[in-house]
Each structure stands twice: as C-alpha cells, then as structure tokens.
Length: 434
Image (cartoon, rainbow, N blue to C red; front, side, top):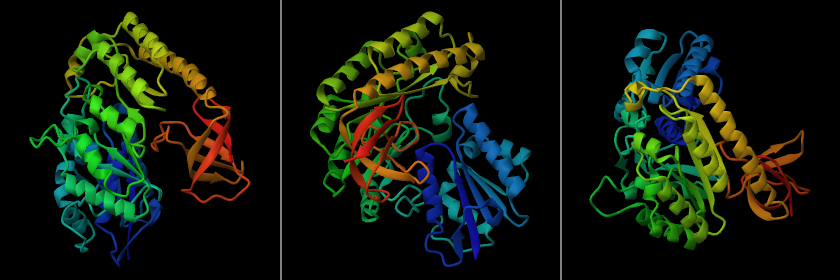
C-alpha cells in the first residue's frame, strides 16, 4: 500500500489543482491518503509563489518535509513556485525528487507514476471532472478559467499562469453536476479573473451566460470571487439583484484609488468609475457585501496619495477589506521602478489603513446586532461550547469574519441554521441559534 500525502498552499485556485492531483489516485486499491509526513511514501507540496511571503512559506514547508520524511519517501513540488523557479529549486534543494511545473500538469500522472515505481494511476494528466474534494461537505470551488489578461505592473500571475484561458462551459457544468451529487450546496466560482470569463473567446458567451446556465441546475447557492471592477456590467448586477441563489457578495480587488497610481499599475478604470460601480451595487443589490484589497507602498506612492486612499475607505466603507504591502517581484514591470517606498513606511501605512478598517468593520457589525441570519455550521468547539459558521456575508477562505453562536440543540456540521446576533466584534459576530 503506497501512502500519499499532499500539502496545498496558497489560494483556492491552487486548492482545485490539488484536488485534481489527488484525483489521479482516486479509488486506487494500492494507494491511500495519510496526514503525517513521517508515514508518506510520496509527499506532494503544491506551492504558491505569488509574493515574497508566499515563497517563504513554500520553502519553509519544503525544508520541513525534507527534515521529517522517512528515507524512502519521495518529494514532489508543484504549483506556482515550481513553475516560476523550477531550475533554482532543482539546483538548491537536491532532496526534491521532482519539480513539476504547471506546464507539466498534462503529464502529471506519468510523472507521479514514475516516482511510485510505475504504479498505474487514473490518467496521464489532470482531469477537471475527476477530483478528490478537499473542502467540507457543503461547498466546492469550481475554477472557470486559468491565467489573467490584465498584466498589472506589479503582478507575477501572468508570468506564472499565463494569459486568460476560459474553460469550456460543458466541463464547468459537468463539474458542478458532480459537486451537487456529492451534496455540495454552495458552489464558488473562482479564477484569477473570474469576471473576465469568455473575453478570450469569440462566441459571445460570458460570465452572465454561464451563471444563467448554472441556474438551470439544482444548485442551491452560487458565490463568485475575484471580479474586476470594469468587468462588472449593469446586466451582471441586475442578475445578482434578481436571482436569490446568487450570493450578493462582490469580491472586487481595487488595489488603489489614486488615478495616477492606478494608471502606473496598468489598472483599467479610474477612481470615479470605482465610485460609480460601488454606488450601483449598493443601490441595486439588497444586502450587498463588498470585499476588496489594496496595495500600500507601491513605487512612487507619496503621503498625499496614501491619505487619499484612507479618506476613500472612510467615505465608501467596505464590508471586508484586506491590504498588503507592495512586494517587489522579479520580471514584473514595477520591479525596476524607481522611487521604491522603504519597508518601514510600507508597514506604517499598512497598520494605519487596517486600523481605520477595524473601526469601520466594528461599526458595520454593530448594525447587525439584533438581526437574524442564516449561518452554515462549520466547527464546534467543545471547550467554549460554541459553534462557528458563515453567513452569506463571508466567503470560506479564512479572510472574512465568522459567526460564533450557542445552541441548546445539537447541530450537525454543514447544517444551515437561524442565528440571532447578540454581540459585535471587529471582524466576527456572536449570537444564539433560534
């Protein structure tokens, strides 16, 4: 019996790749999955390599596995770090048995079979409709496209994943059908550029068309992550406002609001257009939740431009907001820019921005006290005797807050229950099941 372990780092898009890798072993009699490094015959480390902190986490994980594995265990490194630094990994970490770049996923089964002494696997390459779910029983991520066509000056994603390639709608619908049959109630559509779906083709079939076809299935809930602001059309907003099975949750990475910086970042759109799209969503979509991310310390960002960003989030408060300091990434356009902002100033600006958001988040959460929301149960803590779950206002990627609540009755993980909010925290809510 061959024992396989996988460590999936990074985002949900990488998690889907990990699910497909595990699909190679699905229903194999001579293969089982284990959770301890020390027991593995093969460890697969599916890495992220988007920013410096992600690269560090990936390398730390690799060295941890090298130190803990048994002598006969093989190590395979895949994912973004493998794609971006294949040669460097081979040269600097000889303990890795194979570095599998993303470009090699079409022969992943062949590569892994060789590492397992020609053990027969399900397919030569990764197959979207043959996955092993790594999410809880009630939701599934469905990747609808790969790559990005935006070429933002700071971003390494096009270097790693290539330009936008939309997945065939029939494959997507088949994946969703399989997920529904497995009992998944929340389908989460993801991509590096989800709202750009279909723009790389000439068949006039876009995200709205895909959503309408998905709605023809028995899906109970659809959530979308990563929508570019200039691609959120009026008709898409109207569809979300009308269709109750589509979560009114808008994950819109804005990165900044100063027009000069937006232009320098190669971002499409202006501050004025950002304001227009926010107002449309707020006015048209009842109960809308808007999440965004911002970069602080981008090359050339001065104090006035940073304060403009701070004033903006006060005037147009976001339900969810994350921020990160600019990371200087090799081979990106911004890597060679002059006027790099010192690290100390980056960190100071990050802390300032997030402290403002803490106040905003707390005030928004206070308005929810006394209201009742449907919450999906995810964890029970026997020490605090509390359940933890998500309402429609939170995505399951450990970025948004949670709802903690008590219940007189025993509840099963995955159940959807009504919770009355009794207390507001900065990011989380507390309540009781009614």
